[in-house]
Amino acid sequence: MTDQAPAPYAGPERVLSGVQPTGDLHLGNYLGALVKFARLQHEIPTFIFVADMHAITVWQEPAKLKQQVREIAAAYLATGLDPKVATIFAQSAVPEHAELAWVFNCVARLGWLDRMTQFKDKAGKHKERESVGLYTYPVLQAADILVYKATKVPVGDDQKQHLELTRDIAQKFNNDFSAPGYFPLPEPLTQGPGARVMSLRDGTAKMSKSDPSDNSRINLTDDADAISQKVRKARTDPDPLPETMEGLEGRAEAKNLVTIYAALAGQSEAQVLAEFAGQGFGAFKPKLADLAVSVMGPIGGEMRRLLADPAEIDRILADGASRARELAAPTVAEVKKLVGYWAG
Ligand code: AQP
Image 1 (cartoon, rainbow, N blue to C red):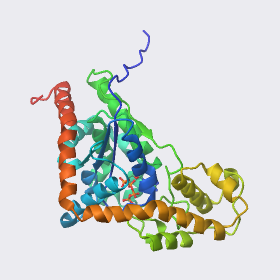
Image 2: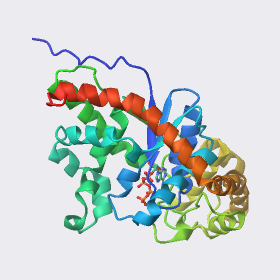
Image 3: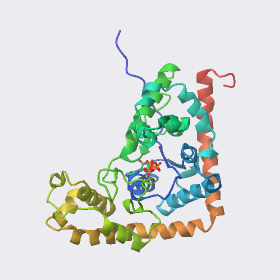
Image 4: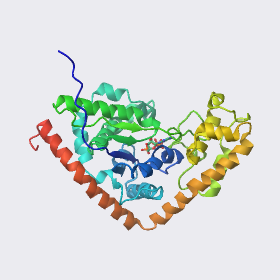
């Protein structure tokens, strides 16, 4: 008998991604994710959600969570997502995510989840004190993606492993329930120099919302002065910039600033080095600060303008949720039948 390749998914291309409302968004979130959302919406049907169900895997103040969701929605709009083009919604407004996640909890294997490095990083030494939700977070993520049968997922590098798990879950579901090609095997879109932006204080650590040092990141809401100051204070070394990227080996902080410049300018790192080779950080940092202010400065202003009208943000999110449910509900109805539920 010959092994037959599983039937490929034959449905349309769709983009899906989301961000957790767990704090101020930063340059890493912007370059790794948001900037791609705005571009992709004009190429492929795009679904972008605010991940409030993921957010409560760690404690969130109930009185603040709704406003945090609006802040992320405002960031989406301020960075160019158009609610008439893309579908923008809050995860908790589409209960089909949770329904599908339960089925996937029964498809995924403990051994698969045990390998997830993000859980290990976030839980640290005291994993027995973490919520079960934090552990099964990547299973809910698989449901977020597959409930829309999304094929492309624009994310930063740190999410690659979770995307592999999503593919494993999709494949196993299709096999277990004799539904070849039912779910697509989605691909992460991580290309580009912004896929892994590092901390401004430590070039070996990811720029992150939860880093206790505010100087480690540029927030979307930082004003021009704060942006310039953070770039000026960024850790570097005394050597001049080299002619090639190989020359930045072992210089993590220097490499990070070149990468950030390239991503913000829409250039390759080689183009940046061609311009600045031989110059030190005394010359490079002011140029980087000006560039960062020109790109990031207007975003914070636009977010503040949008947040002054929370009712309008809520209206956009409610409209997005009803459009999202039109697609998610039939998937869950089909899955219930495939699984053999009484309610299927
Ligand atoms: N440093 C980064 N460089 C590039 N992309 C990044 N992303 C996050 N950090 C970087 C991408 O941003 C998207 C949204 O992330 P999230 O908020 O859902 O979760 P996260 O990855 O946990 O983000 P943080 O900032 O690191 O938050 P904390 O500190 O709360 O864990 C994702 O596409 C992510 O890849």
